[in-house]
Length: 141
Image 1 (cartoon, rainbow, N blue to C red):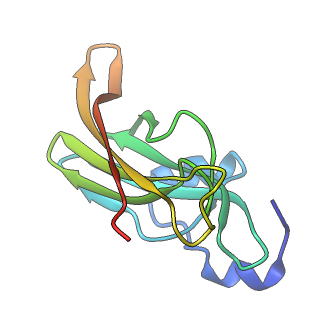
Image 2 (cartoon, rainbow, N blue to C red):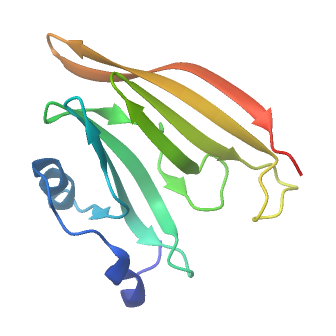
Image 3 (spheres, helix red, strand yellow):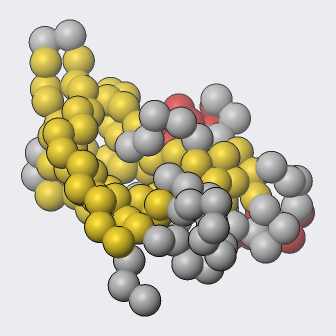
C-alpha cells in the first residue's frame, strides 16, 4: 500500500461509533456505509494504489453496534482476484460481489464474478456474519 497524500481527500469522515472503532485501530474510511435493521456495513482501507484505488481494504459488518465479521476472509486490493465490487444489505442478509481474475486476465477485465450470500445471525454470544452460498459466473465479453 502506498502513502499518497492526494488520495486522502476521498476518505470519509467519522460519522458513527463503529467508524470510531475502525479509525482507532488504524483503518481509513472510504465510500458511504450501508445501514438498516440494526446493521452497518462499513468499508475501510489501509492504503491506496498509485491511482488512489483502495488497497488492503475490507468491509466490516456491525450488528447493533457489535462487530459481526468481514465480507472477505482476507484483505482485498483493487484490480486483484477477490476484490469486492459491490455489497448490498437487506434485512438480515447481505450479498457481496467479488471480481475473479486469472493470471491471464487483463486488469480491466476479470474473467468471472462470484456472488456471496451471507446471513446475519444474532446469537446470545454476539452477532455473526455467515457466508451461506457462493455462485461464480463468467463475465460476459
